[in-house]
Length: 110
Length: 114
Image (cartoon, rainbow over all chains, first blue to last red; front, side, top):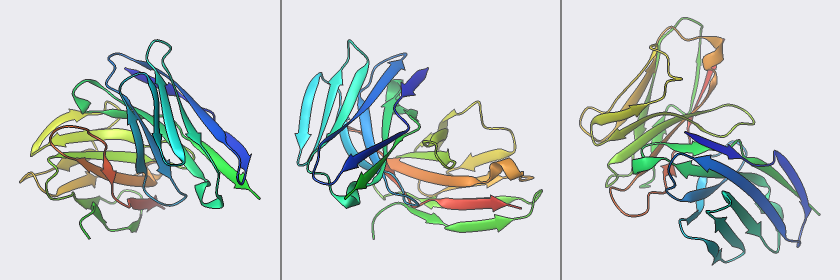
């Protein structure tokens, strides 16, 4: 099965950098997703990592270490609109089931 | 709009009633997922379809829940004899047949059982 852990809440200041961590235990590794979910809205895809290392996409970057079962999402130059929940998710073999973490609720303050 | 569409967006029902939700995935996506999400939690996997075949179903899903995708296009999720614990957001997602498999979510159906 899959087990995913991430912090419940974080607060950061507008313009700053924040790192949201995720640790996972999976029965078979098929990559790791990050999604953003604003309150009352559907999750939207941010990133997918299958190889070790950092992948950068604008203000957002995602890192993966398969040996450590660890990933993080890095948000730079925080904006108020980045206040949302950030979900770490791992697919099982064949991508038939994607298990989500509980999400990290990020609050960006002025 | 070519995104994932769910109907209705909101549903209030009395305990014991049956409800049915519909999901229309992105047209070229053959994979379809149903998730349930409660406040403060991440989406919880319910079931998965590849085309019209239901390939996986969560053990958490009681026999009051059933899902279909008869022609491999839209899907329905039915909950029979609803209970207050069924109150949640029901999310549908779809993904393409090959390559990267990030799921595209619909806006969800918020169910309130009173």
